[in-house]
Image 1 (cartoon, helix red, strand yellow):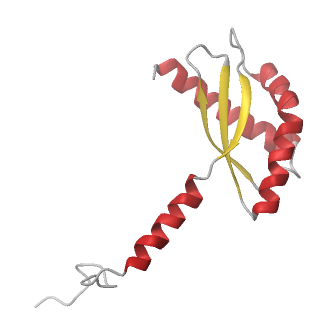
Image 2 (tube, helix red, strand yellow):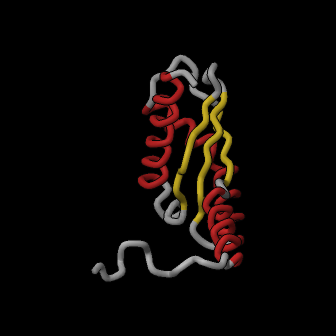
Length: 125
């Protein structure tokens, strides 16, 4: 990925987070923007977010982004100067939930020979 796209991704992520937490304070309490993936031609950006809460809250946040994406893009255009401001597409980032599920599966395996005590904590002679 070109270095410019990486910088644009980080800039868009930071500015969207700032917009959410200043303009949409009540709606964004449970939202964290985790990543932005911008196309090389800067015409499209996938914005990934995580939601703190249950499935009902995640659906409410999805509806919020569908209703507010044009307004967020308009505010973003005032803050960022690019030749093309990407069209924003919001997606829920489920990587945290997948990681928790994977850790639970690994814990459930209960491999023999594992000790609860980390190495090096025993008494030395």
